[in-house]
Length: 601
Image (tube, rainbow, N blue to C red; front, side, top):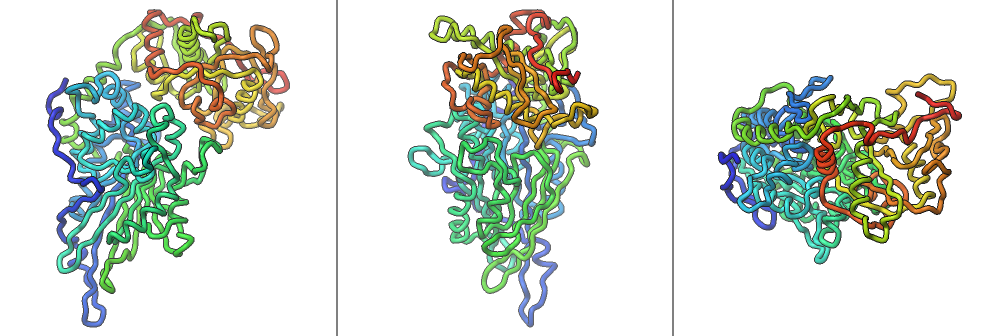
C-alpha cells in the first residue's frame, strides 16, 4: 500500500473538553476600520467561517462508477481538492488567523474510495492505512467536523479509528452514551482569536448530529449510543458556551432546515431541524446546515425569544460548494458583540485541484480505480435503470434475486425454511448501466450505491399489501385519459426514488388513476389471489428494516435473520459465481402501472 502518509499523524490540539486555543493575528479590518465614538475608538474585528458538508468521500472530481472525470448538466465540480483551493484563496484574502473551517458531517461513506478503506483495506486492521478523508482534511486544516448519520454505517470501531486519525475533533453534543447519558464525543470546540489592542475573540462551535441514526444504524448503536433532539441539546449547551465566554456561537448541524422527517413518528424528534434550532434556541449566531443535500447560500431565521436574526447556510454536497459566514464584531461595553453576519457560497467549479491534495492522495485513488475496474463476469445484454422507476426493470430484479437467494440459503434448516421468501429493492439510480460484455465491480457498485446490509423480516399478506400501497404513493395521480409524462410521473410529494420499493415474488398492478391509498390491484402469489393471513419472509435492506422511509409494519415485524455483509458485495459474489449475467436467470415481470386495468406502458 502507499506509504507516503500512512503511519504517523500528529495529535490533535483539542483537549478532552473540546477546547483549543489558537494564536491569531489581528484582522486587517480591526486596524483599518476603527471608527470614532466621541474621543474613544471603537474596536472592530472581522471573522470568516468556512463550511462544507456531506462530502461523502469525494476527494477528487472523479466518478468511480463511470471511470471518468465527474460532469453534470449544470457544470458542477466535486471534491476536497477543489475545496482546498477555495479555502486557500479565502485564507489568503482574510488572513488565516481570522478564519475557521468546519464541516457538518457525512464524511466517511459514499464512494468506492470510502468503501475500500472501510472494508477492503480497512483502517481498523493492524498497521492499516490512514483514511483518505482524514489525510485530506488534516492537510487542508479543518478545525472541527460534526458527526453525520453516515459516519456510523461501518460501525463504532471504524468511526473511532477515523476519529483517532483526525487532527480535528468530531463533534456530537447529542450523541450520548446510552448508559451514562454523557456525550460520547466532544460536544463543542472553542477557538480564541487574538486582536491587537483589544481582548481576544472567543468563538464556540457546537456540533449536532441526526437523531435518525438510532433507526438507520440501529444494529451498531442500540444499547451503546442514544441521540436526543437537536433543539433539546442546543438549549442545554448554548448557554454553557456563552457562560464560558463565547463571543460567537456557531452550530454545525447534520440536519436539514425543512422541519420534516423521513422516518415518520418512530422517534419524537425532527430529522431536519436546523431552522427550528435557530428559531427556538437563543444565543446562536449562525448554523452550518447539512444532511439535506440542497444548496442554501443564505437563510435568515428569527429567534422567537430574542427577535435576533440567525444566519443559516448549506453548501451543496460532495464538496461542490463552500459556504462562507462573514462576521463583523464590535467591542463595546467591555465585551465583543456580533454586529452583523452574512452568508454566501463559493463554487468548486471555479478553481482547479490543489496540487498538494492531488499529490497526497493520488496513490490511494489509483488503488481504488484499479479495484473497481476488476472484471467479475460477462453480461449477455445491456441492463439499465433509466426507466426503472416506472417499469419493472430486469436490473432491479437482479437485486431482488440476489437477496432472495441469500436469505433462502441462510434460512435453510431453520423453522422458517418453508416460508416463502420475497424481496424488496429500490431504483436508487437513474443512470446506472451494466453494458453487454465484461461486468466490473464499478458496474455493480453503480447499481447499488449504498452500503446497506440484508435483513429478513416475517410479514403477512395483509401487511405486504399495506406496504405496497404506501410505496405506490410515489406516483403522481394521472387520469385515465391524460397524457403520461414520465418526467412528471414520479416523486409525488417530494418522495425520493430510494423510498419507492419493488417487491418481487408477488405480482400486482398499480393504478395511478386512483388516489394514493387505493392503487394496488390484483395482488397474487403463485398465480392465486394473495391470502391476507399467509406468512412471508421479506428480504429487505437494513435502512428499510429499521424504519427508513416510514414504510408500514416492516420496522416492527419479527426479524428472523440479519447479516453485516453489504448487499453490494452479495451482488458481486452472485455475479462472480454465475460468471454470466443473463436476464433469464433473474428477470421477472412482477408489477406494472395501469389505469382502469389498462397498462400505461
